[in-house]
Structures are given as C-alpha cells and as structure tokens.
Image (cartoon, rainbow, N blue to C red; front, side, top):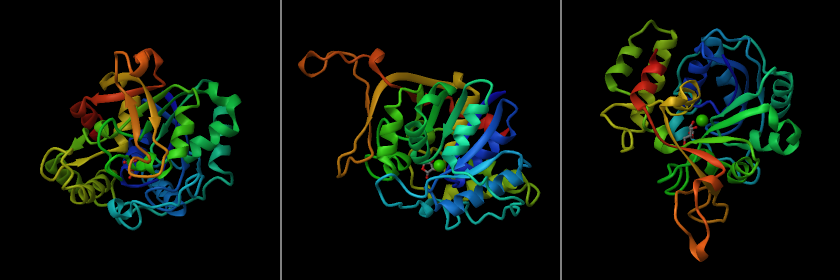
Length: 315
Ligand code: BDR
Ligand code: CA
C-alpha cells in the first residue's frame, strides 16, 4: 500500500476523504495533520478524531497544526459545511486526544521514520505544508509528491477568481509551489466532476443509523442542498465528493488527464488574490519568451474519470 499523510480542515468533504483513505487497502495512512480552514482548528481536530473513530482507525496519529493563515485572518466556510463543519452529523465520541506535538513535528517524525518516500495529500489551506517545507528543507526528498486539492484553471468558488484553499492562505500555496517538490494540483475542475446522484445519496442515507454508509449519506445530503446552485455539479440533488476525489486521484492516477504547467498564485491585493494562474500556452509569449510544458512546476489535473472515481469512492 502507498504510504500517505493527509492534511485536512475537516469539513464535510475532508471527512469523506478521511473515510476513503482510512478504509482503502491501496493506501497506508501514516498520519493526519489538521489546519484551520473550513472551521476553526479545535473543531477540525475534533471532527478528524471522530471520523477516524467511526471507521475504526484510532491507530492513525493526528496532530493539530496552524490555527490561522500566514498573513490573512481566517474566514471559515461554515456556510457550506454547517456550524460544526460536518453537517451536524452525529459521530461517535473520540476516545483519544491528538498527539502532543504540532502538525509540522508530526510531519517531520513521520517522514523521517518512513522506509520510503511518502505522498502528502493536502486537502486544506496549505499553511502546515508551507511551514514544514520552510522549516525542514532537508526532508523534502522524503516526500514522494504533494497532491493538493486547491486552485482552479478557470473560475473560483470562494471568489470569482480564487478557490477556497488557496484563497484562504495564498502565501502558503505560493511557498509550496516554489518548494521544488513534485506537485499535482487537483483543482475545482476535478473537484466538481466526481459526484454522487440524488438516488445514491438516498440509498446511503437509508443504511443502518450510525453506520459509515449512513453518515456518508447525511454528509452528502447536506452538501447537495448547500451547493444546489453550483452549475458545475451535474444532476438535480447530486453532490460532489470534493476532497475525496483527490484521494481517488492517488489511488488511481490513471483516471487523471494531466498537463505539466507553470502555476503561480496571484498574491496582490484585490479581486485576483489567491487565483492560481495556470500557464497553458505552448507558443511564444511576449518578447518571444518560450512557454512550454517542460518549464512547468505543477502537474495540473485538467479532467478526471468522474464515474470511475465515484464508483471507487462508493465501493
Ligand atoms: C475546498 O475548500 C473546502 O471548503 C473544501 O473542504 C475543499 O477542500 C474546496 O474549495
Ligand atoms: Ca478541505
């Protein structure tokens, strides 16, 4: 199984991603690090522990990390995820505390102890990962790849131009993209393309109360309501599995259409702050500058096999 670390701001779709990763035989989840994002840090840690409790993975170490972005003030996304971040779903109580170390230290320990390079699946503002790459550059070769949910080739969601995770901490995203680590950007185009239908959500919801399936049903039903005007999600009453699609991308990279490109984060104040500018040019740019894939820093997901990822998730 592929060794991975998840960085999360649990969050409905982070919860779905944790369940998929923690239950998939293809992945060996070595640690989960938490960051403030969808909800405040304490709530993220609580939700993460409770989701892992639900799926019987009390063995995976969890640590709390950055409470707020490097520069910005935190603005949560409880308007999507509900006040407790998990759609007020009833989850089993956590039977343990998080590790007594900061997320950056858990990353260090996990990478140092690993017998092979580890893939980081980052599903939240990139604050923890930016702190880690800044503090421990000597450990970057221990990272196989960073696969992050964030950014967009086209339109944003938090703002017209920016996707939530990058918008929430643009400096952190810029630091990670400049780190030199192999990086895959699973942006909004992919994020909205992996969905469960209204019928599938209803069937999940009808499973035994308190089960993993019925919890998934509750979470997706909430998402379907709060995203009903999102035209990128096809199907009446459908919901995107969001962050969980990023886990699918690590389990089944054949399901991705990738393009190597230079990606920069717009950092200037104003309406483009937090936008990921993806250079898809192949000809000559201004002044005759070469603009080709070889110069790129990121493998950008342009499209996904939505149906097969959705099936993988449900299975
Ligand atoms: C991203 O922002 C969060 O609200 C979701 O959990 C996801 O990681 C989507 O823009
Ligand atoms: Ca998230």
